[in-house]
Image (cartoon, rainbow, N blue to C red; front, side, top):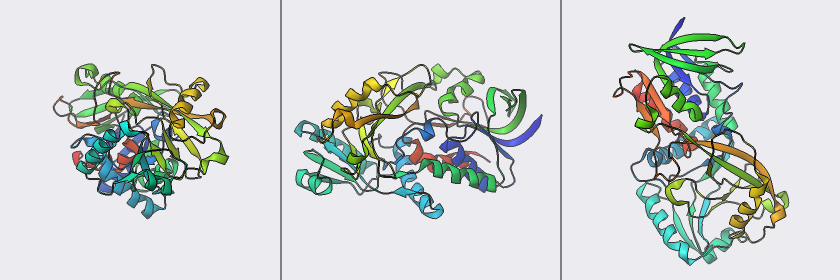
Amino acid sequence: MEKIDVLIIGAGVVGLAVAAELSKQFKDKSLVLLEQHSKFGQETSSRNSEVIHSGIYYPTGSLKAKLCVEGNQRLYQFCREWEIPHKRIGKLIIARNETEIPALESILAQGRKNGVSDLEILDRDQITKLEPNIRADAAILSPSTGIIDSHKLMLRLEWLALERGAIIAYNHEVMKVDSKGNEYYVTYRNPTGQLESIHCSWLINCAGLNSDRIVSSLGINIDEIGYRIYPCKGEYFSVTNTKSSLVSRLIYPPPLKELKGLGIHATKTLDGRLRFGPNAFYVETLEYNVNENHAQEFYNAANTYMPFLNPSDLHPDMAGIRPKIQAPGDPFRDFIVCHEVEHGFEGLINLVGIESPGLTSSLALAEIVKGYVH
């Protein structure tokens, strides 16, 4: 059985960022990344709004707030350095009527507390100058919100990890994990279907929707410590191309209570398309179909601030699933990034519940992991 220093499970954007960072920092360590799919980012990382968030919404002092604000700057810098396609197009968080203005004021105060210093409040006339086709009484302008080509980002992180000596093994599904002393024995199914094992000193769990299964495999009670994943699905509908040009920024209504999601909002793609989504509902099975019957729900939400839309303008686009650790009805839950020494697992680093703003926070999350490994 092969012995290595560092094993990472999961080649989503966070696993790739960790692999790129650790292979740069620890050139003398052997590092392997195992991914069950045939290529990177096949789940949450490639099925989202591709937004670079600014860090407005999350409770002050939370990892989501801190890492989003830090990650925003890191990601823009990385995009410039490596020529990753992106646009700092800005976002409007709107009040569709006077009753929503107090929510805006609360969001503005929260964003400033979190260190987002470029937020502005706009009145109806200022909104009309920026977005003449939007109906809103007031808005927060977040200039540092942008969009990114997440595939190109992951492609570059993969390249950097490989260039720095990491091994990335696709079609390798982790079946179980055992610990003996301070070492971890990982059994995986290889591309031919055979079971093989590898052992390591550092095990970094970036398995996204399967991250709780990895933890549970080690005999840890995931319900007791709050690591159980509750998959939460979000669907997107795209807008007829002829109407996509009527909006140039991201447009968000005030977020849903308890941050189950940020509401059905309007996002732009780098090629100029306009999309609505995601909605948010908990699911038990992982499938990515878009229910066409939800088009009316999307139209009803979008039409409150985009009166130019007709129901026939919306078409099913894609769906994604978030690895939430917040059960239905539960209050806010933060990212879990934990070196599990207190649970008796020296060398085990769990990243669990890495949902939005995980893409924005990916490089900052990798920095935290680097601080644990020695």
